[in-house]
Length: 264
Image (cartoon, rainbow, N blue to C red):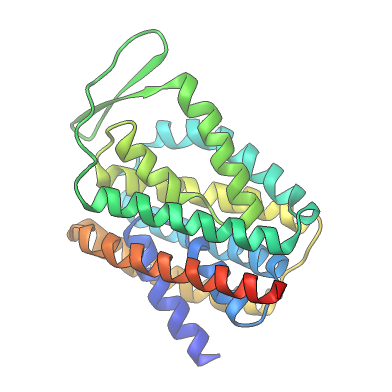
């Protein structure tokens, strides 16, 4: 148990630094510890909710959370997350693992893309279908017809796989809508809390986690998220993103190899 505590503490620190809920690592870690995919997904969503809320409370004090954007996006992401969590039992576990591995690869690509400075400044678009935001001395615009289906799809995939979708939310906010990285990371911490909670609700209808383990690890990731969010406010996250991208690729390869071997 000491080993699990140390591992989850370290990863919760790193993940909260870059605005991720933790599912991209919590699920593979729990699978590695011997839990099946459904139990891992359910427990992961509980830990995501705790991690996100812990990081959010710190980012809120720094006035980096765009509340209006978070609540708007989460209205659709949360609905998708609940739907994904509810229907997850109808999908083959092997296919879910392979889908999760692909998600990790895509996440690594996006994180490398932002790391390499390709999150260039977007032109501020205006019009009846664009929502212009002024927050923290920054201006950016959100395409309403684009963000609604994208938010729902992110939520559905998140609830299905036991993640919070932060691996997509942060890059999309930065790359598609020109939102400054620190605001995107901080706002994501609030959104992953809601996504995790609603995804967990969908899972709990069909599956119950090991609550003793959940509460123990929940305390650990709560502390880790506090530390990670504090570091994120003070330091640039580029180097952390680069390390995380390689970790995601390694985990993706591990899950693909393990899934293929199980088919042989």
